[in-house]
Length: 515
Image (cartoon, rainbow, N blue to C red; front, side):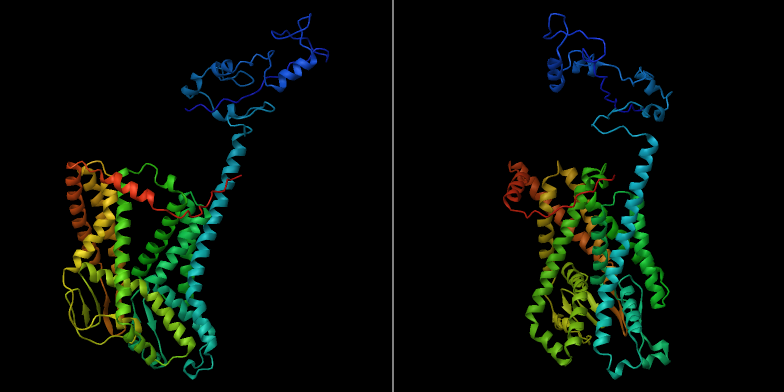
């Protein structure tokens, strides 16, 4: 059993001559009687040098046995034997006794109450974080929809619909971001529910907003206990359950799994950001390096896909504006249409990534790959005017761009590895991480929209991304081997280049000390 730190109990101050106590002898300057004068004693105490104290020498204190004021535990070995109850020895009755770091020694019962109070306060912050993030993500969609209803309440097409109906329909759209199918009911389809339009395509933009809000709330709450993290997820899940009750829907199995993935992923991401040392304690170095490399290469590929999408929108800007102007919508409708397209942009980025690495995407009868695009009708959404025209595409040479981007993102983590075996392990973990994340994104970005039975891409995107990363790892590894044989330290060159790049200092949150 580990021995607690020795209490630094200062010995009683010796009585000064003439104050009623017995005079003490001294080895320093004294008068003819061998006693220190009052002024000499005061000077000695102010300097912290008491020649009359038996603990005046610091070495004596360091070499002394650990003993409490009653001398009950004078043998150090008794703590190792486990015969003693540590709670009894921690209850020191010494007045003014202090711990190793200068804080008062606290009895175990008091310390337990304080620890329990700190855990209860942390759980309270965790619950508040979950409620705050989920409610804010719900308001992101509900507030614009209700505002649009209020602005167009006099429109005949709304009929007898109320603002509560608008909030309920917006809640159904919010649940779509968790994988719950959205049933669009109109006055014509209300008579025949079988002819209603069903939407299963998940708006990844709103899903990412929910995960980001949850991660930020967990990070601000400074959650360090896994139990508190579970409380955050349960609180957010309670809000989602309330949304199902408001929308009058029954969750499907896929919606439950998607909700768990979004909430747990967002909470864990915020927890890792708020407690980086504790969360990663004991993890293997190759695992951390591989995870970081996988995140870096996936972000690099997504950035390239976003740049490709922006380039397509710029090139076909005239067609996009023509579709936008064909609606002849008012200001409110235009703003709602723009907001819808902004939420759809992350989904379009995933489609662009699928086009870069090979599988491509489909919109009903229209199938678009890097080789060619087939003909077919498209929904009247302005941003879809950026889809390539029917005909051949750039071909499989576009894969070279994806491999080069992945290789550029993997140079630094692979160069810092010790040898080729470590590089292989880091590369395998990176390919697995990027592939799994891409498979999740591909699965969420595919579904159906009414008569368009097949829209988006599939989870096969993960295999394509993993293959691109594996090829990039092999190429970078070969280049590093050649460079090492020629005596070139690639890791040192990269570190020097990164050190020369100025980095903005972001404010970091400080953990609150529990009382």
